[in-house]
Amino acid sequence: MAAENEQISNSGTPGPAPVGTSTNLSERIGKLDAGLERANRDIEDLKKSDRSWFKKAGILIGVLGGAIAIPKIVTDTVNAIYHPPKVTIEWSRPLDLRYDQHDRVFRLEFPVVANNEGKSTDFIETLSANLNSDTGQINIPVSDGDIEVRENEKSIPQPIPIEPGKTKLLMIGLSLGPPLSEQALSFEGRRTINVTLKMRSKKEITNHYCFDFDKEQGQEVMAAQEKHVRTPSCGETL
Image 1 (cartoon, rainbow, N blue to C red):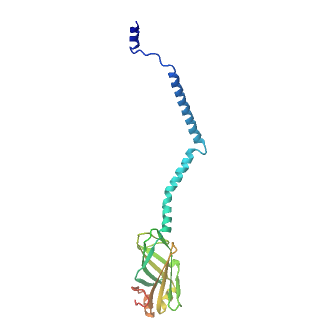
Image 2 (cartoon, one colour; image 1 turned 90 degrees about the vertical axis):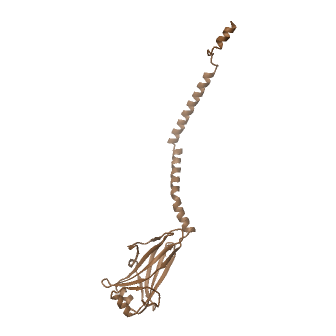
């Protein structure tokens, strides 16, 4: 009889569940539910709070977004301080002279080549010029409105950027209207044109064009005969 009972017991019929197993499972589920409820409440509190993580994160993202745009400005500033521009001007020739009989305007033109061997951009902020005589009796300033700078046959405004590693070919024109135009052509002797470029970097670049005129040559120019001073230095002839 005992053997039969043993066979029934080993036949696979489930025995009674261990005491306390269902109770432990219920407790675990209850704790999980409570934890989820607390997490949901914390998230809602964060959303409503003025000091919520969401707002802080938004501010942080905005700051980071601004920081991405800052390096260009910082780089330009650092380059300007530690790697200043190195602008050089090649004052070219010829110096062209012509007189407009209709408007009575005396015009002088000459090319310049600007180079920048530095690492930051510089600008030609202003350009000034005057024409004077050796004797000091004649000193004719050229007004700002009578100075023209052209690039590729097109007039360009100031300031004029001179970028690193780029060559810029410019044509500078100076105009003298009446009665200064006639005054500039009426005397004999050497004329000196003083030209100054003022850069944004506070650098000033100056050059002088000199040429001689006698009365006959002055009259030729006033008769609308264009002159090309191929070597515009003092003592040279046309």
